[in-house]
Length: 161
Ligand SMILES: Cc1cc2nc3c(=O)[nH]c(=O)nc-3n(C[C@H](O)[C@H](O)[C@H](O)COP(=O)(O)O)c2cc1C
Image (cartoon, rainbow, N blue to C red; front, side, top):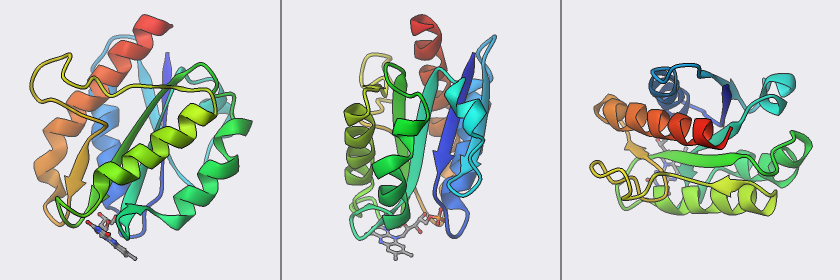
């Protein structure tokens, strides 16, 4: 079972957190995960995936403009309807709007017919409310959170598969 991650990044933080999600997802038997920058999406891989996780840096209290533009037309051409959707963000400040970026991404993906999931409080600690947010510059401090998130997304995608 495949999981795709599509991210925007300018200085590398959001790309790096995708790698941690992949590590967590691939700790689940039978799951393969790959991440693609917004300019280098392997469309066949995404179309064959059971879940799509979208990541964005937080810009001006919300997602990046590039990601917003992509979300307006990208997912609907990638066979995403009915599949599991997740979102994550990176930000410079804990109060900087990472949750709002995630909420906007999930809204887009739901409008494209996807089923939003994060695990929430259902799996105990760490509670992952809408999706994980890593705060720069010490983003490696969030590695474990992102690995757990990847594992939970993979387990849920497998349940639906
Ligand atoms: C134009 C711009 C706007 C930003 N706005 C915010 C913001 O509103 N809130 C915040 O917490 N961080 C903000 N940041 C910081 C980035 O979200 C943060 O550094 C992020 O990890 C960068 O991701 P990247 O390395 O993947 O490009 C902003 C950065 C830039 C360049």
